Image 1 (tube, helix red, strand yellow):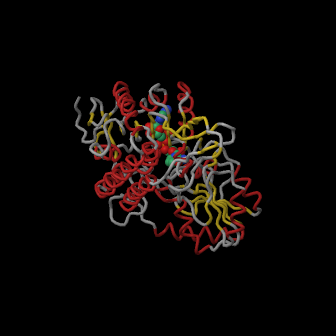
Image 2 (cartoon, rainbow, N blue to C red):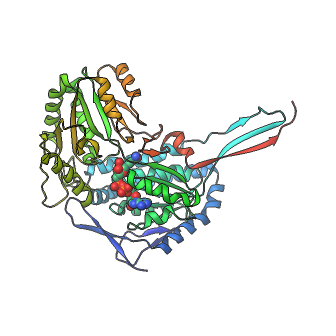
Image 3 (cartoon, helix red, strand yellow):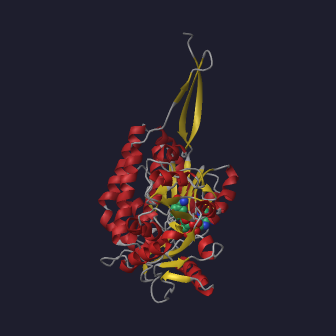
Length: 474
Ligand code: NAD
């Protein structure tokens, strides 16, 4: 089969193109960056068959060899960082600096994962018997990735899945597939055929994967609405599931917070990657006594921030990544304006070229307004007053999501006590968004099921196996 895309899929170690293709749009210019493959059902079957065929050999490889393979992936990503940076900015919209940051973080992350070990538990509790529990791979993992951090979030799945002996069929978002397809091409000579298959396609491909009988686990990152559909389909063969889903993280600013010191980090906690971060601060509750000072400090930071094409020198914030997301975020701003909310910053979304949404901070909108209740996933932030801490915590927790949150205070011990009362998987003190390969990341409530990162995340790609042996009497 042929197509004009220079970004083929990788199936069984081969470059595979398709008759149909999908245009990938640069969100800053709305020009087509390139076309990407549109995987057919037969091609998905081929990818799954290749992953199944590669599985017995890959799981039988010594652990140290799989560790070495991960380090080779890390090196390949790092060596190609500059080319990948340009591609990532073109398809995703983020600044060159942020794109490079994501790529280097991905290379570092997979190197750290390579050093991780699986536990082994030995029990002699039953007379005459020794029980040894190890953690064995599941088989073929289907990995599904969103468009906000295409490379980093793919690596979160590739690293632990391959290290633990699984093989993979990975699908990037059709909005941002090019850098992932390119990485798979670069890895064709690094990994045995069939171990890492990267496909790309339209809206049908995700559901085909989640109901595919040849896939044993789905590792999914995306919205809660899609996560529900994934869970439904995955029941077909009782697939194991990791779901990393949406969030509406609250930041609580205590009255003793150092306003000048927190203004910049609080701003970036909300607006980094143009607000398109699952663990961005999406609602900021500020104590009444310092509310006005925090509002004007955030406005001061916003005034200095450069919004533009990510490929331009000095750009800090790029556009929203795609047209449907732009329409959704604009809809939230329009809804606030129609409801008569006041804006501390922004409030108008121009509709000229590019999916640009200026930084928008809404001044104490009602708690039940859409801009507070919905995950914006864009550069729109409600700043909310509180006078009673218990009330602020209750409002923070009155949410179907439970992904992350943050507490801002000069008294770290007091802040930690507030943190422990938030019903979320991660809480930061005086920062937000920092995730590491060393610590578990898990959504509470409808922000997800399961864990990524840390040893808990590694174990999600395995199933326990216990062997009971006769034990010589002492
Ligand atoms: P999305 O759910 O629309 O899409 C995510 C991926 O799922 C894409 O690859 C998409 O093609 C695929 N998909 C779409 N429909 C599917 C279906 N029915 N079955 C299987 N796959 C399907 O999400 P998005 O808009 O790409 O990403 C934004 C969302 O992701 C936000 O809600 C954000 O909070 C969340 N997110 C969560 C995390 C986390 O770790 N918790 C990280 C990043 C983003």
